[in-house]
Length: 411
Image 1 (cartoon, rainbow, N blue to C red):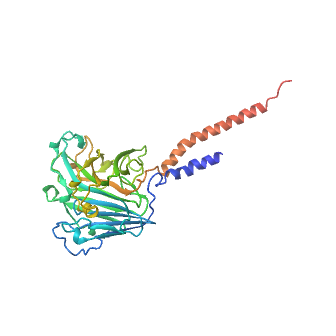
Image 2 (cartoon, rainbow, N blue to C red):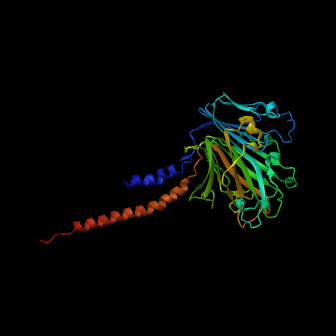
Image 3 (cartoon, rainbow, N blue to C red):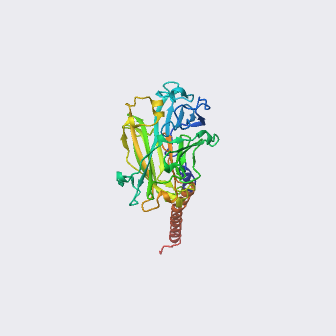
């Protein structure tokens, strides 16, 4: 009996709890992931009326009987459209002449028609810079008069992502600049990564991802702040059909093995009304970094704020109208802000660098779990006292039995 308990506790239990997909992930099984730059376009042609390069990165993740399409673009503010179809042969089509003209409604579509099961949009719309005189690093406690002019990412000029694409590693980078003085020697980047398997990032915050997700690393590098006491925040705008809702949750854990001193993770999930199953998600550790090395001593807390409902007429992404059309009456628009900075800590000006990572995916978020090492240590810590109690009980029973067996009754 004890041998069974020993093997279960020390071998099978650690393997179960350390499984990266336990309690998370979706039923979609990805077998092929690929990148495609400006699908169907002659990239030697210039885009009329556009100062930026035309960037449309198509990430296609094919399962056994369905497909995920991620469309990343800087036509307008940086945008990603997530599309899930019910066939492994669904194809993306782009009418480039229409997309690059003034009438770009429905210039992007999926065939076969009717194959789309679910679609959503995330727009990285604005960067806020604010004067934090009291150094609280809290956007909600900052008076409107302390905000500097907002950086609208739809007004940025973006480099050619094709020059940064790595088709083997499934990575690319959208790098943009503003014509304003602070951005002349700096840039804003959105580093994109796709994945073929479940694994963990080799650098902090060591996010756990699978083939149903893409990772975005948001970077502010070398921008001259408009004041010496500046903190930054990023605005994200999301689009969902009215039968779906967005919920922002904070997940707490007792384990900081992979991200030391960080015990919280934020999840922004899309759920059907009156149901609990998750359709898509954004997931991030509540930490940013003030150095490209992303070491523990360079960490900064990040703070998310309650979801706000927005007006659909404010959407600044050409991609939204190109895929969903002009009529957005059947959709809800949500906005979420994430700010970066440590109360009573240093300001952005100390390093002039900021990086923050977020996963965007379909289905349930992959759940962080204890590693085999941690589970083994816990098993030893709990199992050793039980073992000692068991041995002690056996010794006591054995001695008592011998004591009474040697006793000879008096006649």
